Image (cartoon, rainbow, N blue to C red):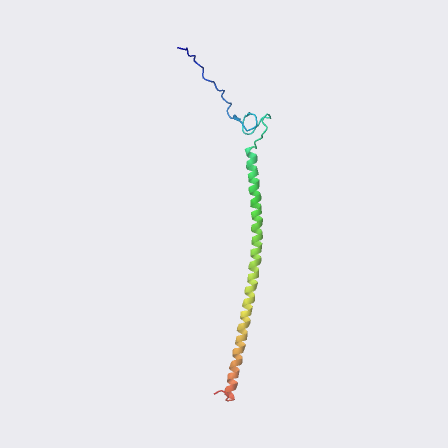
Length: 124
């Protein structure tokens, strides 16, 4: 029988806490000591999370500002529309008032004609 030799298990170097190996296609492995620092031997730079958050906050703020401007423009248009509607209502009321006065005048004239016809005995 062949003598078997004991093979020592492969020891794995423990990475420094917060570091990890990154391998990207076509790039060498590089060690990142932490998320915020990147060694110069690693060609790809990873943006800091604070920068990403600030970038998103700036975009949100810009969209919010644009939305506020649109809201202000819409409110101005709505006020102008309401003013125009009040003007139309006023004109309609003025027209109805004029109609009522004319109707009262016509009613008065008809009463006078009836009275004249009765005096002249034209009405039967």
